[in-house]
Length: 216
Image 1 (tube, rainbow, N blue to C red):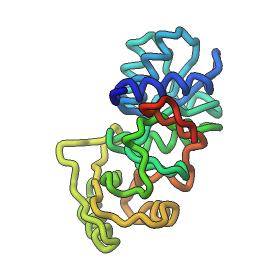
Image 2: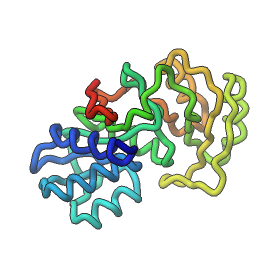
Image 3: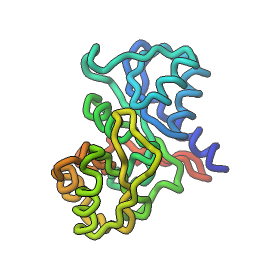
Image 4: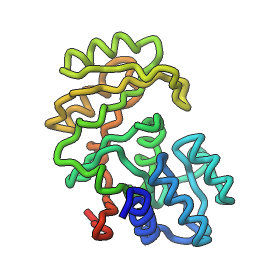
């Protein structure tokens, strides 16, 4: 089974958590794109809140209604992928640059279902560079603070988030305690958010593998 087939396996499994007529959150990335395609194929009538301009465009192109979070109440379920995931359902997200909006939509949702292929499943977070969204004027200040934590921050040049901010990708960071690290980085002045989803992890992790679906 190739990577695209594994992503589709996880995406199809996520339909179990979607009720027709409900409002669901939609994340960003290749596995989420597979989920949007499956949602459109099956013709399940839902309304959505999207975490990025790119996902909004894909949803609308598929004929799926999108709403603004400020106009609704709580979301039933949030479907999103991850760049890395552990068996504790702690995640690194933000490779696509939408980490802040992803974290907001996750916080507004009753349940967070994460869909990945098995290449994203790791024993310890940190091989994938940790994205940190920052206010532009604070970029170098935060980079120095992240170096003091043992990381090697690299500015993702020519990338501006949907919120108008910059992203630092932090390499070689020892993430022994994801919850503590998330809190520590979030407290740095000028940080919008960090791509660690540990304080609010996924409720369910759906992993596409060669043998089929694994549910954590």
